[in-house]
Length: 383
Image (cartoon, rainbow, N blue to C red):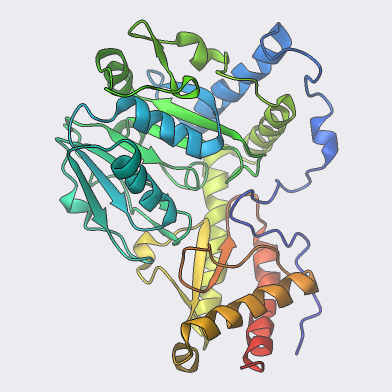
């Protein structure tokens, strides 16, 4: 039977993600628009995003944090282009974005000493194979595979290389061992439900030392430059952005940070994401057709929750028929107003992806579940 109760907020996209509960355009009424971001009022807002993010996330005081162009992608590329090449590099690749970093290291940076440690969607590479005498590039959470690293125990305390971590769908929803990481990047549009186009990059003292002592043998585009005359550009980490930011987006980020602070900070954000995953896990345990792409629960994401169809009859379909089946489900869910943007990422295996980050209410996840069963049954009648 077709369900009758819809999620109140059917926004389950993995980026840009759902806004925080209760959000409206009124949240932006105090944005500093029509003013220079370099003016006192604008710079103050940018500094607030940096300082309140550091406090909320528990970033060590000796780390520096900046707002940078081009979302998380821009932040990761800043690190890759500015820091890699001083020593050998290991890249862990097990989904679309981490595979993209590996491709850039090979084809764009043309690193001579590069190892790529690969795994299929739904799995992790052998973390023990990472060589910490080298720089290691990895995602904390695979946004397109629903797989995360379980913890930071595999990262060497006495590492010689840098730990460069794309954490965009992990920060604010998972515990991050900052002392184990040297470069951490994210964007506002994931767990905080902020707007796109702006990234953040946190650097440890070791990362700063690399920037100030190593000059790559490649040109560094202006928007990637973090040093001048062999010294860190201090202003960048004090709200003096490389290019012009959107002050509407900045105001929205401050609103999201304020909401996070009001509900109990990082522990509350993590708890909300865990509750969303738990609701889906309880449903999958009883389902005769749905399973997790990440079979191992110890590495299963609580934000980008990826589902696959495990019914043997589905497995017998051709790859094209499987894709049509899933697309039919996604279309039915969207037309019904039950869920938007829940199809798997274009490079991932056919399936569904439900965002469970902290801005999503567990009650909406619970309301979604009968609709998933309905959409599956509806799609099956077409094949």
